[in-house]
Each structure stands twice: as structure tokens, then as C-alpha cells.
Image (cartoon, rainbow, N blue to C red; front, side, top):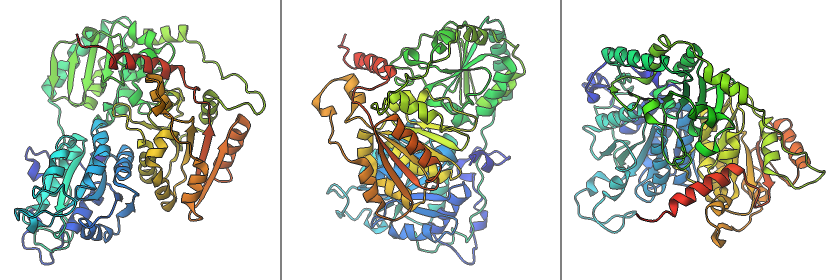
Length: 591
């Protein structure tokens, strides 16, 4: 869901006034905090909440489950609940998870940190201590043995953009509404702790139906916009072979369509950064691939880095998105467009300018120039197909992804786990409407299991194709059971190469070898005859082709788990190049 749909047309600068609470006074039949929170979540587009029950959140869960438009999804652990909320927010724009005090909060916090790095609006709700325990100097359970209950709160301060501790009912509605609003405005996670004894107590501040949800729109400074557009157009129109590089903040700015309009108007060659794959249609006539430094799509680096001007829209120049800072671009030749600002040629910065407004205005001022794309077309040579396998030959990674490529359509979304799946999935050519998700900067292994659960729940019309390494799967495997409980139809490719082979490329060591599991049999055990599930193990291309045929035809309505047995040294050349650069950075000595 596009959360922009809930933004009101009338602006206000007071964040506490973004909700109309005037109807709260004199309510004849007051409602409860639990119902108020449930209705707010429904109003912003959330229909599923990922939970792990604990004694501090049980009454709150009762209030949420009583809301007919909310579906509570019990996860196997808090970490996966957080990862599921991450995946859900990627599709819906906002999500929520509910855990218990400290033991739950400090478990989910890793996933919340990842959501923060990915600019996702995740509302993390924690059942907190009884309001009467605050200030009592008592030591309660689920603490570290101190009467200070703020440890969890202090931890969340570093990985959320707003924190609220609700321990009385008088201003609870204001605290909850402000936290939700900040999360949507900043596209970042927020933390809400709610005392365990409050959710079911009626209070006049909670009407049966909360007032309509209004969120202050972000407005562009029109005078600054005109000046910035004029300066940018003047700069780019002088360039001989300018290019566009799109980044992940396009999603935060809701500017993907605006960038396409700009590309159509100006004819520039257009690349994406790795974490922006899927945001721009790859069948666009000007698309040239992924710009990722030394591991870029063939010929993409040459075109981008030979340009005399680049327009970066929503770029993030972190270590992993730049392949260990291997981008050879000069900021004095770049126009950097972020969510609310524009910097031209490493010079003047224009603020209070919304990215989508800027791109739309710039599209009307740029002259058509397809020189860079013509250069790309001249030098481009189509990639060869993997060598033909001998009958029953051991399966190769390149052959696996050749077959996955043939599965993609507008009805699928690819989930790429951290590791070699990043590089192999980046090579996939996404058809129109095919989704794609990865977690590049934070790179928490195991993320993809929960993210698959959450994304699939948010987008039931999509069939997810998740590529997960064996080491990552061992971190979070339990919530395959939750996928089955939810009736999901995901296709999971478990890449079994015997260990942490991505780390092995960074640094050799016996700790990179893990205990091998019978992964297909494990999922069978999790299935236990409940729900629709089909598993298989493949060793060669013939078995893989047959498995894909079964998963996409006879077992189309099932969760399909395909364990793919691979050689431990079968990795992409991009992973090796990437690992060499990153390892060199990690081992560099102090000056």
C-alpha cells in the first residue's frame, strides 16, 4: 500500500496535531488502548501483525486480535517476527510486530536495526512492565536484575527514529499517534512500549472509532525548486554523454515513476545500484544494468564512469553498495538527488525539495541526449549461456540460475539472501512487474526466511522465489512452519554448499564449515502433514528441471522447498572479486 494515500491535503507543522483528537472529549462509550492501536494500524494499511506472545503483551494481543481487520501471525521467535515485518514493509510501505519486554525486545532488535538501515517504516511494539512497577524500586522478571527498566528503551534509541513509553492512559493516544506518524514521515522504525496492565482499560481518550488519520505532507520549496532545476538543467544540458544511476532511496521518496518519466524525456543511459534492483523496470529501453563498481553488470561500469556528468537519484554510497568503494566517479561531475535535497557538481545544496517534484520538473527542462546509451549499445556483447551439462553431471550455480531466470514473471518476486545469492540474483533479468528484494548494507544472514514470510503475507498475489544459502537457513529455518500455517506458496531454493562459503572467500578457516543437515527432510518434519508442502533434493540439471516443473505446475498451490546440492567451491566470480576487495579493506593496517 502506498502510504502517500493517507496524507492529507492540508498541511500543519505541529506533529501532535496530525490527528484530530477533538472528538475524544465527551465520548459516551469509551474504547481501550488496545482497540485504538488496532484501528490505527488498520487505518495506515496494515492487515497483518507479526507477534511472539509473552506475559507482558498478552492483554495487548487480546485487543489486537479482537479487531476483525487485523490478522495476528505468531512467529517462532522474535528475530523472525522482525524480519517478517521488514519484508512486509517492503511491499506495503509500513508494518508492525509485537513482542514482550526485554527478552523479546532485545531479540527483535537486530531485525529492527536492519529495517533502519533499509529505511523501512516498522512499528515495533513491546509489552512493557505494569505501570505500577515504575518507580517501585522492585526487580521484575525479564530484566537484568536491576530496578531500572530502561535498558531496552536505551538500546532501541540507536536503531529507531522515535521511542514512546506508554505507562498512563491520559496521553497514550497522543504517544501512539505521534510514533506512527514519525515512522511514516521518516520511513524508519519506531519503538512503542505499552505497560501490560493498560490495553484493556476503557478511557475517554479512546472513542469506539478513532478520528481519521491525517499525516502532514512534505512540501517542496517552490522557489528553491525552480532555482535547483534551472541550475541542474543548465549543467546537464552542457554534458556530452550524461547518465542516470538510481539508488534505493527512490522507494523512500516514492519517486520511481518520476524517474522513469525523466529517463523517457532525456534519453540518458540508466543504471541501478544493487540495492535499487527491482525499483526500475529492466525492460526500459535505456536500461544498462547494475552499477556496482568492480562487480557491475558487463559494460555498465565503462559507460557510467566514462560519462562527463551523472545524475544519482536516491543513491547510498556505503561500503557494500559501492563494492568496497570501488566506484570511480567524481563528485564534481555529479548531481546528487536525495529525498529532500539536491547537490550539483559538489557545489550548492538545495534543501526542502522533494525528489519526485524535482524529477518531474527537471524532465521538462532537459534536452534529449542518448549518446551514453548509444555507446553502450555499440560495445555491448550478449552474455553467453552456461556450458551444456553432461547427463547427470553435478549441478553448477550458473546452471541453477539459468533455470531460475526462466521462472520469472510479473507474478513473482525474488528474495536474495546475503552472500553469493546477491551476485547471482543481480544477474537475473527481471521482466516487467517482477519484484526483487535484498538487504545489502546491513547484510544480516538469515534475513531472507522472515522477509519471505512477511513479503508473501503482504503481497498474496505474488509467488516468491527465495534463494537462501545453507548457513543462512540454519539461522532462521523455524519460520518455514509459519509460512505453512499461513498457506503461502513460496518457492525456496536452498543452496547447500556445505558452509559459510561467502566468508570462506574473505578468509579461510575451519569455522566456515557447518554441520550438514538433510534440509528437505527437515522441512518435511516441520510440515508434519499440516498444510500444503512439497520438498525435494536435486543434484543435477535434469532433477532441477523436473523439480521446477513440479513446483510451477502440479504443486503450484504448495510451499515448495528445493534443496540444491552444490560444490563448496562453486561461487560466482563477482563474489571472489568482491571478497578480495572487502578483505583487503578489513586487513588494512593503521597509518
